[in-house]
Amino acid sequence: MNSHYNTAIRALIGFTAALLAQAAPAAGFYISEVGTPGSLGTAGVANPVNTVSADSSWTNPAGMTGLQQDEMLAGLQVLLPKIEFDSSVAEAGGSDGGNAGNIAAIPAFFMVKKLNDRTRLGFSLVAPQGGAMNFGDDFVGRYGATKVRLAAIGGSPSIAYKVNDRLSLGGGVSIIYTQFEQSIAINQSALVPGSGTLPDGKAKFDNMTDLGYQPFAGLTYYLSDNLMLGVVYRAEMDVNLEGDLNFRNLAFPTPPADEIEIDWDNPQTLKAGLRYEIDPGKRLIFSANWEDWSAFSKNQLAITGGVLNPAGVLERNFKDTWSAGVAFVDGSNKTHGYSVGFSYDSSPVSNKDRTIDLPFDETYKLSAAYGWQGSKQLDFALGGTLMYFGEGKVDQTAQGVRFKGKFDTNMALFLGGTLRYHF
Image (cartoon, rainbow, N blue to C red; front, side, top):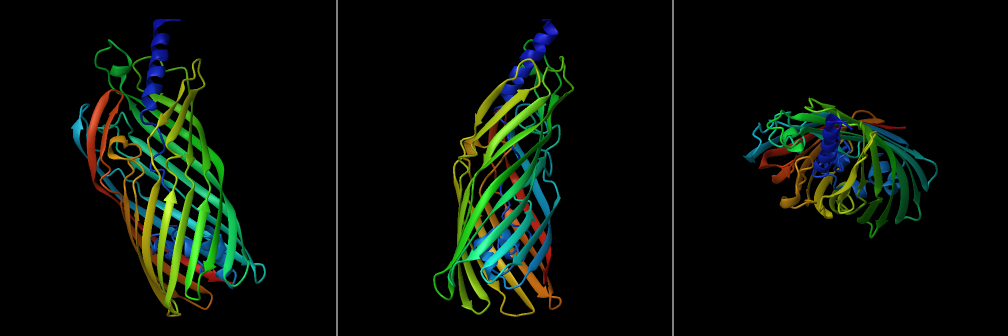
């Protein structure tokens, strides 16, 4: 075995150890706003008590029994992020990366079919999670990540049954296709002892995909004529991504490996809501949510396709999160209506454990929507949610280099529109 090959093997092992300090999905959060006025326009607060439109097939399948006609609902929301990191320590130098957020368009489709007075069938097509950041190759935290992108789309058949005038039950399963990619700079000077100062290399996880499933179930129960309870549970989902590992600009022979696997668990969630009808069509809504982010905390990584196939587990020290929100919906006018909402989500990770590839922090959401009737069978709505993601403080040492800072600007605007057709 020649010295160049030995160098490549040592570099691969060292690089894998470095990856275990930061490799994981980017912005792997659930998107509760699905682009409809009842969701995007209430900061997701109305999701568990939705009995008025076809997006209940996703937000709470039991709510489909509230629809008295067959219905299709299509929507499109645009994500406009502004995410800017401000470093205070940068041992390797570099830039702060500018606006790392990526503009994205997120479509959605929902349908409910009335089989009889008690039974409904539904189908939804949504992007239940995702996000992306691109800091650039000269980023101060480039040894943690330079670019990360997670995208998922899920098709979900569902069914609902009205047990009696007060109780309805529903369930379904989401078939979710996940894509992930990440780029990381390689600190070659640290990987190859005695080499002096070497330029950065680059590693990219590409074409990483997974097809998985996530069951969900819900109920709606009228505690009184004016007060309704809604509850939705989504089960844990195993994500097993497999894809290509590519190296560039290496100062030593390319390591004998070209495949990578990353595994994690999407958290189970439980969301409950109360809807109180103040006057006909005027509703005050409260919700609370629990997400099992501690289950996501262990990320597994393995490099394959070579002579050695190093692997390991990264413990992120994530903890479970909670959220709470309030919303008001005025649908008392038959030709138009509006909604407003506010919610808060706690952070799954403390400042000392936060990393640049997944800089979760607490989240605040403020929403509003307006809808109007276009014809007897067709109506429209526009809505938006402004999200603030907290400071996202990071103090991380990656590949032997420390960087520290916070996000001076860390927010995103979701703008969406829908059209709904009644059969």
